[in-house]
Length: 250
Image (tube, rainbow, N blue to C red; front, side, top):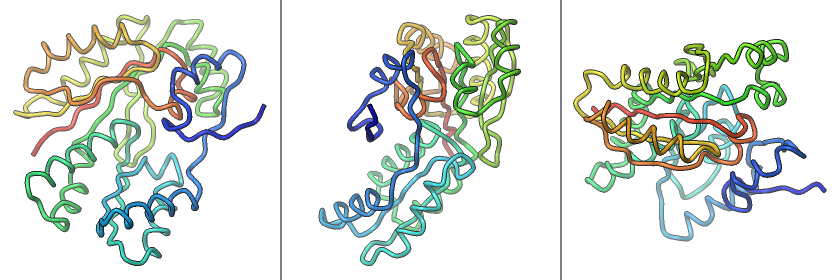
């Protein structure tokens, strides 16, 4: 039966994975009414400034829609940032901004800082299967079949323009997870302090083992977030995603 769900509110990732064998849902950007109702709630709670960190504009129309609605909304001063990233790659920027706010940074400086942080946030992840990327139209069928037959696992990150990019190809599951760690370590290298996130999609044991390795290999990092990716991302990646996000601190 057809139904609509709100990501993380009326459905969770575990439920999406449970149903993937029988149905693959479609994802969509939030509708204008939903965004406006959130802005209404923010205004009613007494806030007058909004910093919104969005999924890459190259993957979704969310950022553009939010900019339009925020520009029209009277009574709120809004700053909408295209993170050029996805999932916790965007989320970690919001977490860092919240910390800076608590430390006393003013709104104008915070908006400027958020913009400057974009290039310092990088996400690296590997998938167990290419089936769902192919079914969601993100990669071609031939690529998916060849990858499956040869047991090749692409490692995915983001290009500076906010497009998904394959950054390595590794044969086998364990080597692909090791490579994710290696790439994250290389990105963090030379930076005295980094914020980290270790995320998974239906692979908690592997994520736990990876988090322990991350602590050893990136000792200057603090794992701020750990857990399951959002249902909307899970639809496109399928079960078995494991990834690391690194935010280099200024």
